[in-house]
Amino acid sequence: MANHILFFAGMMQFTGVTTVQWDDVAGLTIAEIRKRIRQKWPDAANLLSNCRLAINEQYVEDDAIVPIGAVVAVIPPVSGG
Image (tube, rainbow, N blue to C red):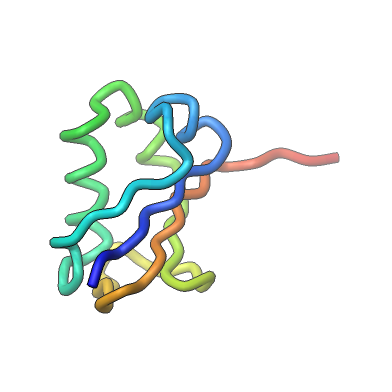
């Protein structure tokens, strides 16, 4: 089963897509997902280092394991007022 990676705001601009489907990321850590994103979109590396990642709408740390079929969201920092 595939996992979906969602990109928001600036990450969407760097990647040129809002979502990708990766079949081989279940069982990887979030740190490994970050590495794959950096490899595919090197221009996004600086922004990615400041992004929070979530699995199924829950923020996670880099050691979290991606389960089969999960949705991973890449969320850049936001400012508000």
